[in-house]
Length: 521
Image 1 (spheres, one colour):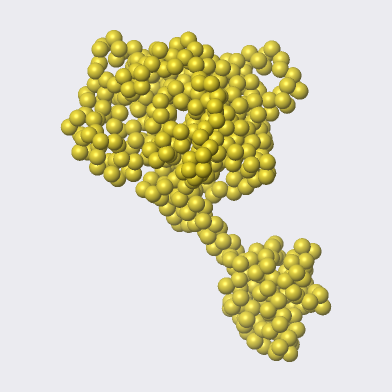
Image 2 (image 1 turned 180 degrees about the horizontal axis):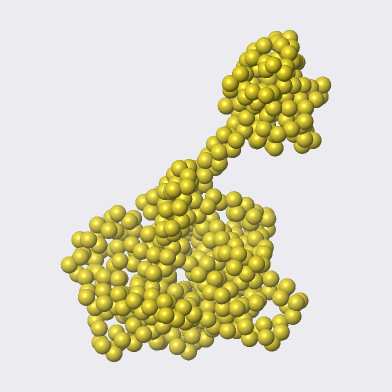
């Protein structure tokens, strides 16, 4: 899209609008990138490296005019688990491998298939991630001190935090509450102001001047470096590859879904159309690039992308400027970040997590359909209590089963004029005993053959001429075609005959490929 924008011409007015939007997005991305990195178990500078390198490459090469790339809250759970199991080097390698996989998905033109993700699955895993992020921030929100490491699974985590409740810090709680209050207040009275940055900056200034005894970025991580490290390849030894590969698959799956969802949100807000395969290739290159500079998972970020659109961006130049502004901050003002209280960043992420829990959508889906409700809650609960990738896979499978059942219920076989289910064995008054007409409608596929097969067997019991009208059939798969072939064979064995009428050319071809002789048409 950047090169399309070059062909269209980058006028001064467009560049001014893109520059303003880029600075605005950078203001939002600055505290978020550091907060997400810390919550993921790595240093805050890693979040900035990811936003700078990954964000620039996503905008330069991507298939969306407005996509903003960088570290995303959706990855916190996976990244933290990967770091705990494989270390920082394993995370960087998994990010690099994920970039290769994403690029291959785009080159194979599989980007459009991500759009088939059922909506209840999307709501379920997004809300589940929000619950996990919220739980992961309780320790810093309350200033708790744990004797050992914080458990990853949510139930042991809550139990450990409860046992450490005596160590809660009133200063940390005050910083958390103040941060949330300032951010929410600014959102209400000045919605166009950068509430996240103002909230973090004002609370940092207050806690520093008041001398509050709270843990800060500097006390836990030291001073931030002024420059990203020189690019270098991660460890590509066989053992390292084997350990990182499962995480790379998970990063790829979530990265593809999150990025294309973000691009679709931008399309809906701006009226444009993104190129999904180009976007996946760009996400792949961005992940490889971020890994080379010590960053971690890059994806399209919905909140920052929406901010970019609302800020009046016209071209991907806005996303590139956002990355350059973050680089300038790292070069000039990195030491100032050391004063930020971790409780303030935890409060910021608490707001992000709460907004990720799609409460209204969960309630609406639960009311509308039992099948969708089952998909939603199974996905959410598996994500929260088991594993993110398992939740997505199980939710997708359940969503497919719900769809199959729904489509099978809208497929049928009807006698003329009475339904087969009411009078399948008796011809109607408009037909004689030697000839009967049946109409098939809807999709005749593997999900509906169990119900339709019983009806067709009853049709074949009486030796007569049966005309099967497929005018209302929209699709016949190989299983449905074999069922019709068996009906023809059963009728022939009993001295009857099957005539197929009204079938579309593609359905005729499918029936012939399943072995239905041409004389039946």
